[in-house]
Image (tube, rainbow, N blue to C red; front, side, top):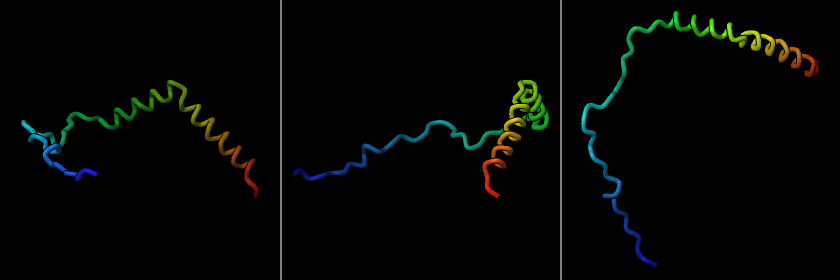
Length: 68
C-alpha cells in the first residue's frame, strides 16, 4: 500500500481582483403599487376564484372526512 500524501496547494485560489459586492441598494421601490398590480393580475386571471373554491371544497372535505 502506498503512503497517502495530502497537498494543500491544489486548494489555493487567487484573490479577488476588483471591488466585491457586499450589498445592493434598490431605489424607487413602490411596494404598495407593485402589490396592487400583483393582486389585480391574480384577480383578472381567475386564480382568486380558484383559491376561494379550493378553500371551500377543502374545508368541506375535511369536515366530512373527520370524525367528531
